Amino acid sequence: MTRCLAICMRQPDNELIAAECLSLTGGAPDANGVAYCTSLDYVGRSSYIRHGVEIIAQAETFAELTTAIRRARFDATDFRIEWMAHAKQCPIGRMEAIVGVADAIELYYPNLDRPQHRFLLLARDDGFVFGEIVADSQRAYQTHLAKPYRTSSALPPRLARAAINLLPPTIRSMADLCCGSGTVAVEAASMGLEVWAADRDPLAVQITRANLDYFGYRGTVQVADAAEWGQQAEGLVADLPYGINLRRAQVDQLQALLDNAAQRAPVAVFLAAEDLSRRLGQAGFVDIELFRHRPSASGNPVTRVVHRCRSAVFQRQDSVDIAPVGRAADIGVVEDHQQAVEELIRGYHQAHADHDAEALRACHADAYFRFLGGNSDNPLDWLPDVYCSRDYMMEWGRDTAVNEATYQFSLRFISLRCNDELAVAVTQESGRWSRPDGEVIGSWEDKCCVWFAALIEGNWKIVGQYWRDAG
Ligand SMILES: C[S@@+](CC[C@H](N)C(=O)[O-])C[C@H]1O[C@@H](n2cnc3c(N)ncnc32)[C@H](O)[C@@H]1O
Image (cartoon, rainbow, N blue to C red; front, side):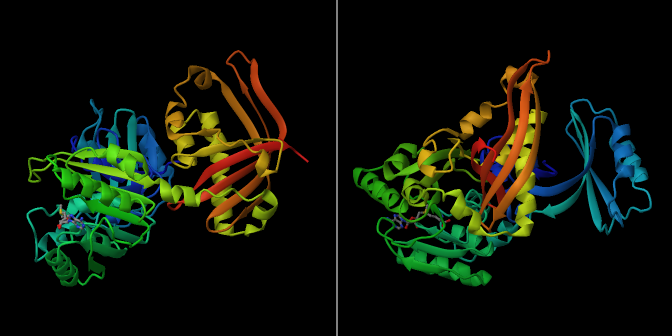
C-alpha cells in the first residue's frame, strides 16, 4: 500500500520533524529520518522533509534489486543516482552500488550535471530501496529570513512553518492570534492560505503588514486582544507571549486567550515555553499532543513546547448522526473516488491477511474508526461507542494470536456511492481466521457489510462499518 518515501532531516532533539512528516505525508520517519508514506503532495512546503521519493523497486539483496529494476518500466532519460546508506553493515560500497544500478537502467544514459531524473538508492538493514526523487522541499522559509522588520521574540521562519504544517494540510485559512512581527503569517501566506492575524500591539500589526507587503503576500492584520478577537478560521496558530514565571494577571490573560482560541478554529497549534496541556484542557481543547523543539547548536537558543489540539466546541458541532443508508445512497457517484474507496476497503482486508499493522492503521481515520453494530440499517440501533481509537490501533499486530492466524477473505461490491466528502459502500463478504494447525477460530459467510469512508486530508479513510445478513 505504501509506495513512497519521505526523507527527513535528522535531528533527534526535534520532535517536530516526525510530527510534520506524519501530518504532511501520512508516514512517520524512523531513526534515520526515512518514512514510508502515502502522499508526497505537500513535501514542497515542508520545513524538515528534504525529498519525496516514489519507490520503483525494493529487495532484500542487491542482486534482487537490480533484477527488479531491469523489469520495472520507468523513464530515466538523463539520470543521476544518489546514494544513502543506513545499513549498519552495508554489503556493497557506494560506487559499486551506483554503477550496478546504472547498468540495470538499460536504454538510458546518466547525466550527472544536468539530470532530468534523480534517483535515490537507499541501503537499509532490511535491504535496498530504489526510487525516483519527485519532490523537494522548496525551503521558502530561507527566503523569509530576509524580512525587513524583526523583533527579539520573533520565531525562526522554519519553526513557524513546521508549526503551520501540523495543521491539516488541506485547510484553506489560518488565524494567528499573537502575530508579533508576522513570522507565522508570512509563512502561511506563502503557502497560499488565507491569513488572519492579530496583535494587541499596534506596532506589531504595522510590522506584520509591512513584512507581508515586502514579499507581496496578502493577509488581514488587525489590532485586537486575543482574548476577545472574533475571527474564525479553519486552523489556528499562536506563538504565545507568556514565559514560565507568570504573574497572576498574566495567568488570567493566558487562560482567557486560550478560552477564546477554542471558539476560533477546530484545530490549533500553540507554541509556548512550557507544557500548557492542563490549561488547554480547561479551555475546551482535546487530543492534545506535545512536541518539543530544543535549542540547536546552530542557532535557535529557546526550547519551545509545541502543542497541537482540537477544539471540542467544533467537534460537538460536527458530530451529526450519519445518515441512514437509504439517504446516504443518494450522495452521488464520483468515479475517480470510487476506485480509491474500493482499494481502501480491499486494502483493509489485505492488511489483515498480510498482518500489516501499519497498512491497517493507514486505512483508518487517524483517531477514529467506529464499529456501528450488526443487523440493522436503523442508525438508532447502532452502537454508540464501540470504536477503535488510535491507541487501540497501535496495539494491533502485537498480539501473537493474530499474527499466527491466517486470514482469508472474499468480497464483492454491491454498491459504492460517493461524493467529494463521503462514501458509502455495500459489500458481500465471506472470510475466516484459522490457526496454523488449520483450526478455524472465526468465520462468516455472505455477510452484507456497509462501510462509511470520508475524504480526510486528501486521503480516503474508513470511519465506520456495520454488517447485516445479505439480502
Ligand atoms: C512571542 S510574540 C509573537 C512573535 C511572533 N510569532 C513573531 O515571530 O514575531 C507574542 C506576541 O503576542 C502579543 N500579545 C500578548 N498578549 C496579547 C493579547 N492578549 N492579545 C493579542 N496579542 C497579544 C505581543 O504583543 C507579542 O507581539
